[in-house]
Amino acid sequence: MNTNISFAAASKDYQKGQYLKSLEILNKLVDTQQDVKTYVLLAKNLAKLGFKNEAASAYALAGGLDSQPESAYTREAALLYYEIGNEEEALLNGLRVMQRARNEADLAYILASIHLKQGRKDLISPYRKVLSESSNPEHVVLAVRLLSDELVDVTNWTLVQNLFKKLPHIPALRLLNLVFTREVCDYELVEKLFAPVREMIESGDYSILQKDNPFYHLHWCADEKLNQLASFKNLPLEQLAARRKAVPHSWGKKIRIGYMSSDFWENHATMKLLQNVLELHDRDRFEVTLFCHTPENYIATNKTDRSAWGEVCTIRDLSNEETATAIREKQIDILVDLKGYTAGGRPDVLNFGAAPIQVAWLGFPGSIVNIDLDYAIGDRFVLPMSSAPHYHEKFVHMPDSYQPNDTANRPRPKPMSRAELGLPENAFVFASFNANRKITAETLDVWCNILKRTPGSVLWLMLSSARVRTNMVNYMSKQGIGADRVIFCERVEYQEHINRQSAADLGIDTFPVNGHTTTSEQLWGGLPVLTVKGTNFASRVSESLLNAVGLPELVAADLQAYEDMAVGLAQDPERLNGYRQRLKQNAGIMPLFDSDRFRQHLEKAYELMIERAKQGLGPDHIAVPALPARTEPFVSLD
Image (cartoon, rainbow, N blue to C red; front, top):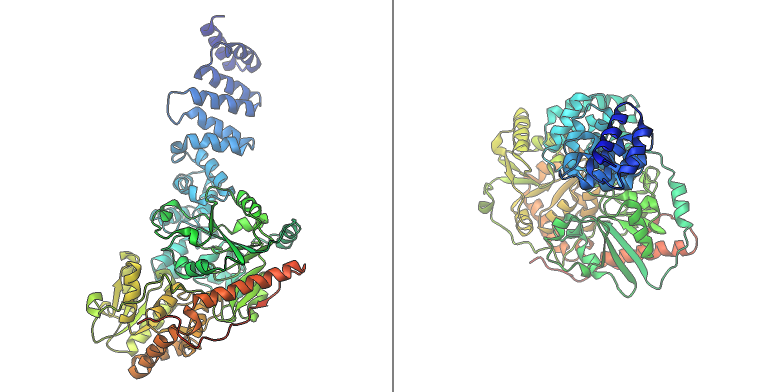
């Protein structure tokens, strides 16, 4: 057979629409002529005849023989495989042409969709821009979904703004735009963007809340009745729980605890709290496994031997379902999700029935909606029983505070001078080291009132960007506060951050989201913190910490009392010094910084959960009994 003539004939038949005739020639030709052009023409004929799976295979073969990198034929294979629902082959071929996907929306849509379905949000960043610029509405909608957890990406706000201009009627885009606007403290734009949202809610229309990111929702809404609606999907959680609990499970002599997080590296805020508790777990009674999806670049900076925290099981590259299977294979009795809806969280793993008892703790300050959970660990301050109607989780009340604090690995404070920190020697210094997004216009208004009422005082804030500085200074100037009354500092190494706390006179808290780790760091550094009584978990954390360190007087009843107390303490140095001295004395004897006491309470909580499960009882609220109070210091800050 003359192959050139045969190929020409097959091509001519294809052009005439005689696909079967062309295919007949090609089927004979591929026995002797297995090259790119033959497989491509074979694929085209098969596609025209409706044999899309076979066409995709032929395109894949052509791509494999193509001398061009990132072959267009491999791309076609990926598109066809995805069209017929073969996501495994679509992903395999799509990953071979990843660079094309950065510029081709059709291919980007396939890869991003599959990664998102697998719970691999860490892999979707390269495809956001091309999808956001596409004219295909499906691509744009997916681009919106991909933006949710990308706050730290410097290009992301531009993408959000562009999408919002293109599709201003999409509520999710308005809410995302608000997230980024709050991050840079552009209060005028926040008000402009938020006004329609406020109008909807005030009219009783809460539908927009279903489009809100649960974590960033907490930064503007302190109403726990509304918090439970953020991203709410009405999933059949009772059915998921029943199916999970029906899976046979063997209880061992030891209780097998699994902790799941992307924060298992020593410099993350979570580990600043949790590390010593993990190290202290009673290995005679508990087996501890860390289900780790921490990014490799963070683990690379880790100097601590993580095996001291527990057996490390890496799930970074597993899908949600595969992760749940891996957890089941470990026969974990209690799985504790440490992330919830915070950045990098993978709570959906729990909806695949990972463990007979599933618990939320520490990372997310609220109900983790849409997720099959038995318990939320809190305390009587952050989770009073009046909050129970707004949670599907049952409460586990720790007797002191829900927050552990690591005194073994956290550096001891070594006070720094004001001169070293660029602070005025004779001014009264109010300080907040909270994330800028937590500083709402309402918070800043109160702070401005405090500065007006305390001549000679300054406000000391931690800065995330020059843009934040400009926006804050401009806003405060309109409130009558000059730029010389606010001093910004940068993020620094952790030891220095602890050291600088006591250079201030009084820590002042944010709302509706308090300082969480930030507040305990200020207290550890010897700085009293003033807060206001909150109305949901996120706004009650500082109250919990202050009670656990024996300073409940620093919890103001409302915003006016908060303002008055700040002014009063600035004008009464003897009273304020009394709080500082009490804090120094209490830090070594009160429960807040007693990580071993916390560990024992936590282990008791786990035992009580297990007891109920072994008796065939469903989850119920649990109050963990308190150990006797310390009478001797367990740590010294001198």
